Image: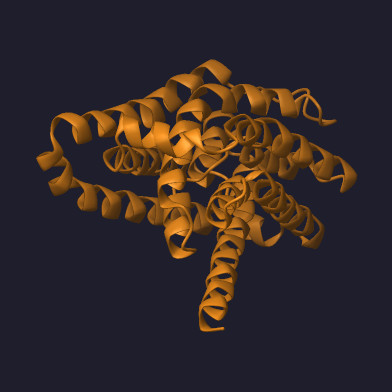
Length: 288
């Protein structure tokens, strides 16, 4: 990947994250977040996403003996929980939308601080990654600007200027989603050959990581089916834009970037399949 292409992808990814998290903040009030989180197993959800899933990914990359760059790509995704698209998936799956928005907001905020450290800790558990340099402090600064700032700004606008919020919410959502799609398209085209060379074994490891994370999230999601679906979708659908930004910040020009993209594309496909399955099951129950 040329430097120019890497810079374009980096800027598009940062713009996508900023817009998506601003939109999440615009949809929320502090009271809604607190209320939605009060009735879920918050501690277990956080431990699952920041500890259990990264350790699961480390276990899989070691068991399958994946190449270093593929392993790093999986670990970066494993350390980046709850994609901003989770509330959209939750709505499609007829799950608890308030909980989805609340958890996405909280976990995105925590990710700005925890994901770089979780990534670095997980990388130390994988043989062959000792020589890799992960830019923790630089990544923290970038994530504060692209996650924490937009989230707080969105919540503040929603609270102090609800009229402005109503005018800008939909344009912000459309622009950020389009930017995310464009970023994913550009990096896919730039790294197409490397993505196609991922291989069946790494794809199997990625598939198992997603499905086991889904099962873990569903188990920890509480008593209500709607909340279980939210936690399951959030735990299995990792934050591709965040992982891609981490890869570009610390591993630009390596096979880590296409590994993140290949895994991310698989996660999107599996997420849509999970949503379609739950909608089908719910429709059948209503028709019975």
